[in-house]
Image 1: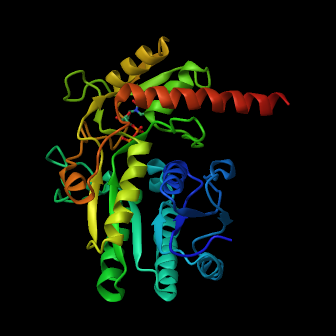
Image 2 (image 1 turned 135 degrees about the vertical axis):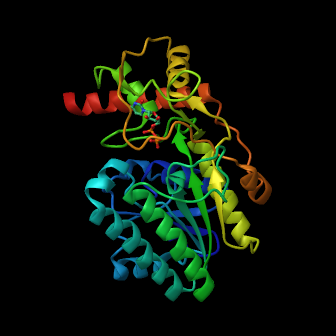
Length: 337
Ligand code: UDP
């Protein structure tokens, strides 16, 4: 059994960003212990440390896992993250995301664990008036998912103040791309994100991509987002952990690239990388989509020494495409068997 100074509890370690972070943690000599209920995570994505299946709300189970592995810090990914669903089922989002986080923080408090890296989101900014977004941009979420994450940031501040649990809350922009070795990747069900949906249109899993809106006030009329490769995101987490180990104070930090790409530019990249034409239709705007969201990442660079290594847009698409084909073949083999 693995225990002690190099063990990190990773809630949601079977998920997309969680599994990539576990791989990097292992490369850096840590033992990541994944705690996941496998509702959206995948058992096959847990390859670099033990998997403990459980609910965050199950205090007895959490306590037993903390007692068994004695992690020195926690990286907390586990949360529901479908924006549209959060609007129709806020109870699910508040109960799981906030209730689960409270249970986790209380378990940490009782076990004497005082460091946590937390998955926050640029959705806490809502529809900001100024771009690029800095950490001081006012936070005004427009859906229960974003609200739940903002509330958790507040809870973390209060738990630091009262109990000395220090945190880094990382506000992600658009996570994308897959592991360079093709071992793990993006496997959401349902899949709502742009790049996987484009790839699904290439493999025939959906007949065509719908581009949501072509009349935005952007150079080509489609929305602009800040797409950060999941490997760079993972590196942001290990850098945040390192910062906390060096006694850094609690912080909220943007993780993006600082660059923006439009939906059309992402489609162009996919066509360049795959040599295929993306079947598409031009549809209405999706409610709640601001025209442009890009990050100011000065704080991540200054405090965490954050560097971008994998987020070149064609590398994002190439790694996503390699994994997508592998996943599609695996699913077809299972269906055919
Ligand atoms: N988008 C699109 N068609 C899709 C999915 C997404 O045009 O099938 C657009 C969406 O309107 C947004 C961008 O792609 O401008 C990124 O959307 P995604 O859902 O990937 O991430 P979000 O920015 O909403 O977190």
